[in-house]
Image (cartoon, one colour):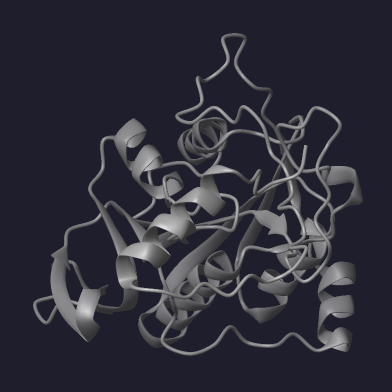
Length: 263
């Protein structure tokens, strides 16, 4: 039977007001409301669809964070076979550190490398979508991103992945497991978990706790944040008139003479 690991993380809920930490280099995570990363939820749904249609064992692996238990119990209530929560981590991990932690758990806690490792194609705090490629690189596996559909190959030798390309074009790729896939969207919206079903799962199922301390030598971030600042509120609008050249020149003067973000 095919084994599928789905990697899940919590991300800042952008519906809420975001606050900057005193260091000025990150968000204040203590004041944030966290929610499951949207594309990770689609990865869970895609795995559950594969299980229902073709048979598979689904293992959901998540980083410890506020509200993550609810997300894991929701996955179990909807049909996931195992839920693993990675503990012992500090706040505000870099993308490279998250990828390293996920990789070690996939290697050490799931047994043999799963046939498919699904993750969201990106997150609100990882718009470059580097989690999937980094994990694939560490495991020595192929990676395909922006996937919007999966089905077995007609000959049963692998999977057919439907990838969304620019301009509304879609392409089909033959994927030979094991492989890492970045899910853009499941074939249908992630299913809703009724409260009663969620509570039942919390009483009858369990989340496996796996402590994974960070390595002594920190994983170097690919991007270093030097400072985060809010945009300064606009005082008033200035209407520019004249020729195209005059307007362009005046616009450059205005932009050059203003600090567009507050200290």
